[in-house]
Amino acid sequence: IANGRRIEQRTELGTVEGLEGFCQHLRHCGFDPVSFDGRDPAAFVCALWQMELRLGHRVAELHSGILHYPLPMPYAIAVTKKGFGFYGAGSNAAHNLPLPANPHHDEAARALFNQHAAGLWVAPDELLPVCAQFRHGRAERALERDHPLALRQPAALQLPELHYHGQDCSPMSALDRFFVDLVQANPHLRPRVGNPDELASNRLEGVLHALKHRVCVPESKLEAVDGAIITVLNEEAVVSACLANQGGLNLVASYEAFCVKMLGAVRQTLIFARQQKEVGRPAGWLGWPLVATSHTWENGKNQQSHQDTSFCEALLGEMSDMVRVLFPADHNSLLALLPAVYQARGQLACIVSPKRERPFQFDQQQAEQLARDGAILLDQHEGPDPVLLIASGAYQLSEMRRAAVRLSEKKTAWRLIYLQEPGRFREPRDHWEAPALTPAAIRNELFPEQYPRRVLLTHMRPEVARGHLWPILGEARCNRVLGYRNRGGTLDGAGMLFANQATWAHVLQAVAEVLGIPAQKLLSREERAALAGQGKPECLR
Image (tube, helix red, strand yellow):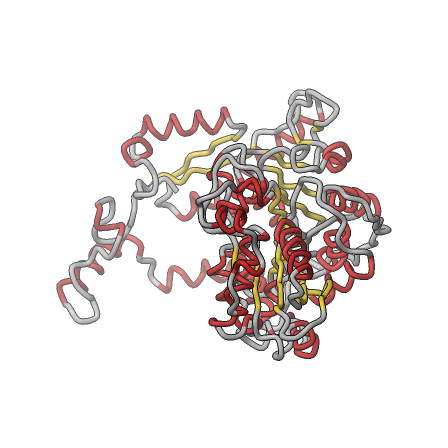
């Protein structure tokens, strides 16, 4: 709609030359522009008809060999002015409420409205016969809510075999193999992969070889005209390509720091799916994961611009029955999540996964229990008044394990919980969200009241985690939360943890605080000096 609105460059698109330049730009981008009078309702109908004819001609030319893929896509431009048919049309006033007063109360404003809207008026005796021409067709047309696009119900999935193992590796390798096998097992479901960066860099080489980049002119064996991988340096574009593929299988993987650009489109989908659920017509499309990898704690090559935990934090604020926020720590824990993620209907999942090699943490039974319950008791050291150690995130679990070893050496009791799905342990916000949470019996077993002293080490910002997880953290004076403190730079993993006061040693410092004991009981003089910024942090590596 070329109406000179403020969100476009009016100095260009508000002129004939600007519109012609826009049409040339569209042609260069593979479109077939059609301009028409945007002040005439009949012109819209004619433009739509013309677009259909043009596209039909292009398909015929393709089949006859005159044209080759891609075909020019019709693009209609309605030329008009902002607020056409109303007082203030074409002026800055049209961008807000142009009338000088409320016409309900002000006679002059009412006269202005009637005067300028008169050009749009069609008398009822003239309009009724026209409406009658469409009435029969409308009676046969389904309501928008009953349109096939709103009622997508893809067939149930055939799940591939799950290949658990006990080796150290990149957790992304589990997703890479599973998705390729899933596509092969379900040839009736169109796969689509959203890729705003490098699949190989994010450890999805198998997906890349099997599905290929979608291009107009293939230049290598990793590209194809009918490739299933949508690659463009625009996160909103690639996620929208997958959100639109509601009859198929989807996967989006991006650097965590840049997943934030997807939030607007993702949130609109979640809101609409929730509204469908609330009126008793739940969305039927198959669930899929938004994978935030190359994440904050392992992405130091481009400084702090590539270190941001906002994506998972924002999605944790959405309803837990619509989107799951997951922090698998190794290959098996990520693999165990995938069947439920892809079998879900009308639900997305945010998976925050390392791409670097991580140590083996969970066997098959533990991984599947973790996927089912959202958290698991990993280990404990018996004794009086144990401190509850809670880790959420792959690097955070490794730090917690090291802290636990020191606590055992110092004869201090502890229990270690891995929290993979924080949203399962929040306070439910309505009766639709409540069933998505972990049952009270399991929550009380994992976080018993007799262990009030708790330290949480999270992948996210501590304030965000504390706000969502207050039901399992207990009294503020008895808990500490450590995590990303907006500190970063060109640092390795250990450097990132130290800069954000999130190392195993910082955990022990927090344990000393909640237990009310001196830090020197748990940390050496050299380690305490490093934490205080007066010693060398290398001693903590």
